Image (cartoon, rainbow, N blue to C red; front, side, top):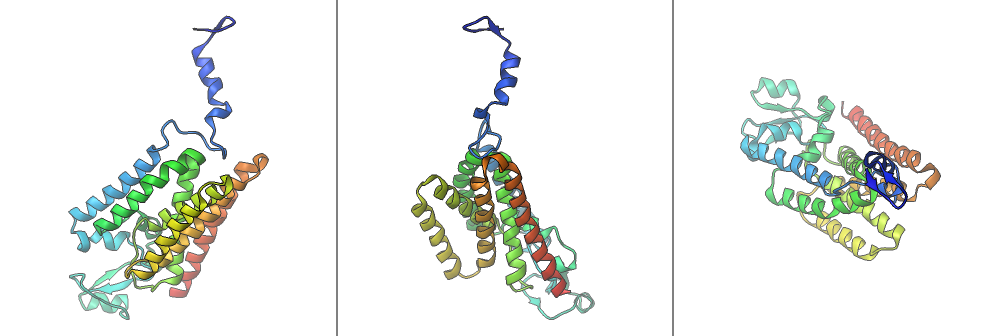
Length: 272
């Protein structure tokens, strides 16, 4: 027992009471984490682990890249992986002794998610993980672990949906950039809500968009899709009325996820 101003308190009872008190909730209804960096570190760990496995299994020629990167429609690669035949059918590809790479339209639906955790280029993963390291703890501390994770994952899927819809169906896309842009979009909305340094965040987003559209080999589709998805979810997270906070937050998150999946399905139907 712990001594108190009047009598004694049971430590277990106090702990249970504190668990339900407002101090254990974030400003937007999430469960406050004891360490708001843990989810970010786990996400970084998963990305780095996948990258190390890719390195260990052939790096740019790793079979894992073909399996996990987002490819809207299957394509016929040369066995060496140095080129592909964009108009070849699967039967013709296999008959000619080439390597057929599965796409989402072939049933490789997992690529919608696995591509968000897959990297090849060291600078690509370095920049993405550095951005996640700075953005993640801020949002997790304000939103809570579950809501932060929802913003990250659904933004990544929204980025995949934009890639499916707007990119060349025979071009592979990979990386966490869509999810990272989603965090930027959510942070911009949050800064607007609390009247923070919106100009600084918008400048940062603007510079990243300029980089996206001026440097070759970058999926602008994934970046824009993730940014829009994160901004929409972030808006629901911080502007939801208190009396309906959780239902509004999760309904909006589910709506963005459902819309992303619907766009992916529609695109697949046009590719069949």
